[in-house]
Image (cartoon, rainbow, N blue to C red; front, side, top):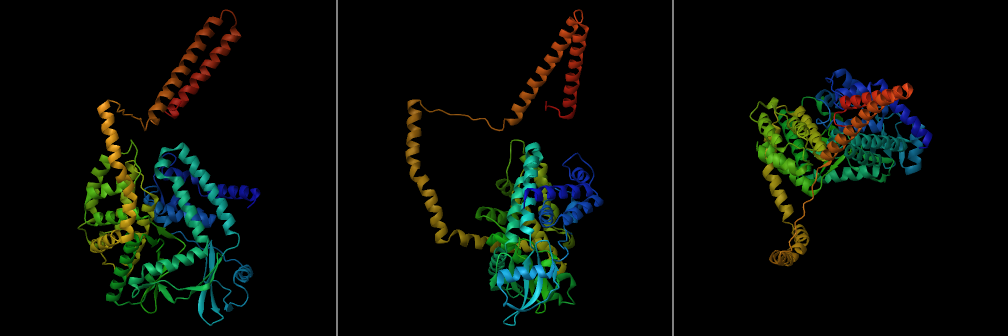
Length: 530
């Protein structure tokens, strides 16, 4: 997009922010000042994000997983985000299809879309083989607009982190980077096709209850994706499903998401009600794989242990695991965090089933970390949101589902799977070869240490860290003392000059007053920041 387009988009975003009373929203979420969060402000914020399109809708979805960043009323309202926009004229869709797949793939395409979102729209079609399919087509021009929006958001995040310690704790640049990663993956339908096939493999052990619609190859490009068509209803719209079957589906569904996160390290990260269908054969179909969560092996193992510790009400273990995953500074209150965690964790145990919410428990952990200056990885927020959504769908099918009991029952399976993974020959060899060089060098280093101690040549260096605040205090104090001396010197010299020249004396007094007033304004506005 040309520079003129970037400027135009910037003005468009600014005007939408003004209409949505962005300043009021910033006050309500605690970024600028502090005002009580209101439903009205949350609704305006959601509507503004929907108005601005794909990038900002996806931003809202990510923010809905950050109860540490937004008040509850905003989290609840962002959960209602609707990515539903007027459809692109079918003539433009046909041009994309002919460019990407050619003229002869389909015998019929319904010109009226089944769904139209900010990234793509979906049409029903028949392949030349007669197979009933759905075709997902990327909207023309959406990539260029997303790139402009992401650049704007990255600049805003850098500016915020440069000016606010809270923004650093919230890792706004990491949020912007994560948004960039998710959006570009969602814009590439080749990636989405791979994700769909990957999740199909991951949930294969639950195939009697869950499945992923088959990707129809070779009809896959970066702009077009063809999938088998699935007949079904939303979970909340299901007819009188047999209660025993509903309970079986609910448990399998929640177990599958626990297994994706804790064992496989890759999971379908957007299981909201619109992306899960109850099919005519009584199974659950998972849809839309633009948003996939991926965890490195160490984080996955730590999260598995963390969920098990939460389910077993072990506060000290929960605290240790969270701190091992997080970023802390000298200002982080780890002792206070452990104390508050011991007080809050038992709330999610030994309660009536309708009062148990694992999603709320993970959200409380995020808020608790922020209150004590502890920065959780952004992956934790997405895992928390995913498990919360999965739990909501499972309990729509079976309100009596006990998610904490499911977590406990899955614990031994997760541990067995983890042990098998760690004991694989390739894993053992990788660990051995990683540690072997350090072990071989250890005797030589010990000998060097003993020699230095014997000869008295051992030196110990101490490098002070986390002194930025102290350095800032010293500079601020020096600046204020220097300014005070200048004001005093101006007043004294002006008084002495009064006999020689009243004009020079008046100028000196005015300069001293202005400088003194400026100092007072800075001191009152930003204590310690002159």
